[in-house]
Length: 205
Image 1: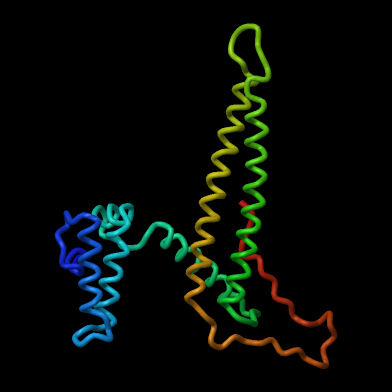
Image 2: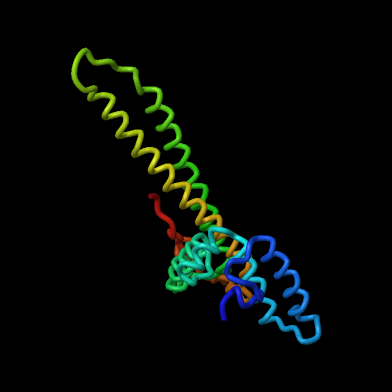
């Protein structure tokens, strides 16, 4: 069954038709209504989320995939982070709280890196046109332009990573650790002998 069938609309339906169809279908399929169900209602919601977003609708029409690029990126980051935490046999604590902490630290680190690239971009832009040459190509200008392009590319890469991490934070809000393990301190152990868990999930780009 396609998303268009979930809303009972034609694949050529415009935005207003999609909105009207969603309202009708949501009212009929709501779990609180007779004949409605959570599964059908969720399908209607998903159909509206995808088809009301031009970018996601185009991607769905082309590939049949309903997840957004950002959501897929966040899910990939989630798997990577959780794989590392689960593999740490000495981990004691709340998985989700730890994941949020790691993600916040990563966002801060990326933002600091982004600021540095923005400063580099501003500096390189000020250098453009500064050095003149009497004849032939301006090698200095070529060098500056190359560095400017590189800094801009790095800044865009950092911005994309931050977007992904922010999406990961939104994804983590849907999760909770119902049985976090609390590390118990051995009263007979010296402070220097206590095990310490080191988290190094993220690395600088």
